[in-house]
Amino acid sequence: MKGQGSYVPPGYMPAAQSEDNIHEVHISSIHEPRQGPLPWSSGICACCDDMQSCLIGFCCPCVLFGKNVEFLEGRSWTGPCLVHFLLWSVVTGICCSITEGSLVGLLCSLVSCYACGYRRAVRAKYNLEEAPCGDFAIHLFCHMCAICQEYREIHERSDGFNLSVVTAPPVLTMESISEN
Image (cartoon, rainbow, N blue to C red; front, side):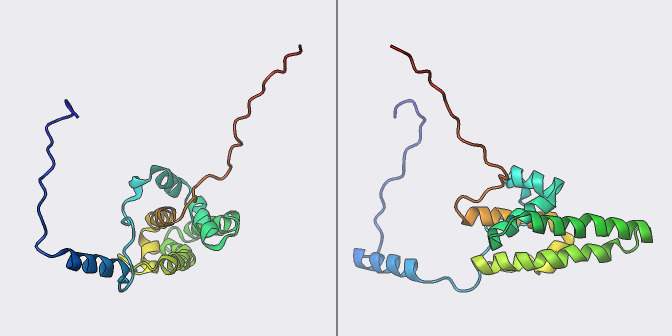
């Protein structure tokens, strides 16, 4: 690797233990189960780590919420998306227009009640800690960030889950048949 830089790997330093002790420590650390819930793979404010989910979560959170529910329950994302939309925008909009904004916070808690149950399901499925605070409080104060974090966690721990609503068919090519 000439011309690649001046990095030289460190020399070998033998361990102070014998090979038998190292083997026993290595095996026991692999098979020893972790006590308690695991940490989330990303923080609540790490929305920009995945720009696709960040943009969908902030522009149209009902779609991202529906996709999370689709993965957790195996049903279509459109029903939960519609319920989320009704709770988030219609009920809050009506409340804001009737009370001139005084009861907006109260009715915003409706979507938090609905969404925190699914956050609890994500935590139960992956044995995650209730952090940085309770599920209801996360959705009440940081709802869009919570939906994005839940999507990132589901995406990180599952194979093949993505945001695509419609999958394009494979590219087909046509070849002409020449007549002899």
